[in-house]
Image (tube, rainbow over all chains, first blue to last red):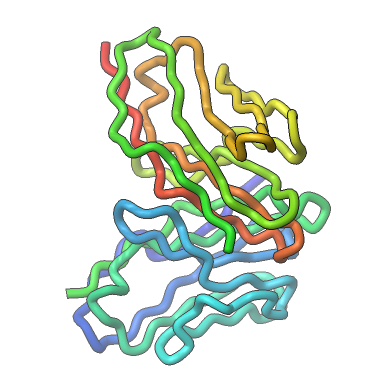
Length: 114
Length: 113
């Protein structure tokens, strides 16, 4: 079974530029999560989708971050404009509706904002 | 709100030593508890879980017991190997909160020959 796919793996941008990350969850997984992991900290949930609807985006900085999950499969997370403090690893995870508390993580995208 | 506290690392052990990584939590209700592991250059992987009080999760020689009375979920292994070197994250999932995971800050384990 293929795991959660993310791209790109690494990205370096200057502050005030925009960037987008892509995630393809495990086939059949209804729930998709985006986490931000700052160096030395645990992952923090940014947004949770159930199929193509948003369940929780309470910690998403909506003035600069946006996310969508069209057709309930792939998802894109965008940052516009980026700030230095956005430097982090962005993790995508998915879980099946039958075992919702078991999340499967992708390898992450490491973003460096200079 | 929910929170997870882990012992700070790095933890450095010799091969075959006994491992304990402490984890305590604060949550409303009755959360599920997890240990995730992150090997160098890889994504987070679920190591073990426990969904109710007194449950013991186990996998790959690692164990952790859900202790409601002490709000703890300490990770243990009787004999570590060099291949266990990784960062370990304790986490909880509040079933009343959309199954969102709340993570601790992680504990880096280094095992030397």
